[in-house]
Length: 622
Image (cartoon, rainbow, N blue to C red; front, side, top):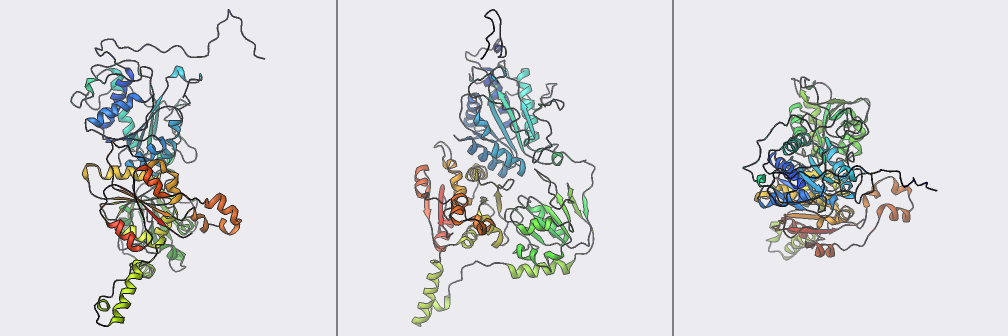
């Protein structure tokens, strides 16, 4: 039984009452410290290059939201409103992927903040800049059972480049040069530097937890206009970075699995690049987000290039087509002595097996997230250089010849012009039948990925979901210099449509040409259905969501479990069949819908002018 104290005693649990806001000297009738603080922070972020803000509506974040709306009206940002915070996070991720500049994500307190975690994890592991601006209750309302209040500081600690629980604003600033405003502007500078990877090895997410007291919104300050802001870089004399000796310091380095650790610390600026000597039989491995540097290195060294479809490096004379079979060949993959890795390889067991071999020298360029070390002896390098000397033409030539033989040609056969023009009825009829057979050929996975690849050009953007289709594309597609995006940091299926939305919004801003095409499976599409919602006030991007629908998770059919599991159990808990009608989803969310089954139909819809959002459903056999 609870023993109650005597009535004469005083029992105190909550913190002291909130201090009154200082509005002295402010002529505005409804000035609010929350609004002025939000204006100072967001305005400086925009001055530092933020052009996209993604927000989910909420009460505690209303000051940030109203400032963002004002910046949108002034033409200073593109504002994206998403009712689902998980969708908002991945939309910002796509924007950061495309631009290399962080988008700011605004949300209210409580579970809203937790919904940003999946996108923050992917941003950490993939090195994508992002600003998480989470509104919160002030300290006196934490830990006392207040509504919609949880421990937000530290929620992202293992994954962010900087995290700060910002002091609660308690004064208004009618002139824009008060100490609170200057502190917040400096904080925005620190946050932008951290998100962009300044002083670190990679870009990544930053979390600013922003507690506000009531009134939660007020009249916007006059200095929010671009001509009256304080000068950039004004020093307030105090850093907002957390104290490294504070055990709860939200910006402390984290040494746990997958978090901020030694791999994210900057290297010694005097460190020389790792020199790759001539001699060892070498291959260059380009994983996700390796970029053109991988192709350039392979060219300089005269080494074969093993480039995943999501690497951004699948082009060039040294590209190894059909690399999985080549790595399994004892005369090619079996003779590799050194592998140089750029990016994050995730798509093939053959590459993983090579990099786990303790007898092979592996040099991996450091990237975001965990350092690569599958064989326990991988050499991590911040930069590499190729030593002078002769190219091993015998080694490179063997790979090029094998690559040529392994290349897959999925080009539809050309019409027989002579037979079509023949005066002999049987010849002409045979040619017509052959052409019709090509046009009516049912689309399979190989034809689907080939058609999408052929339809995409450098001004387009191609996004792959973490579905079976990306592995098919990796296995059969040839070289082409196309901008490719994929969330391979953690390779989850969540947030794929939202990521593509972000890529499309960023790449097409200002009237830039091109179409963003997202190729994914049906389960990945269903996992992110909420991302289909677009507010009517926002511009409609040119976005094709191409769904390869095999009515479940057929990727499990290619794993060992398929040979071990009971068929009914396999379907129930892994394949997870469904009967969703994508046509009805498209209608509900206001998308154009096309269902295609033949190569001719697919080519036509992919190459026709795109004026907005399209869902293209392609039924596939299991």
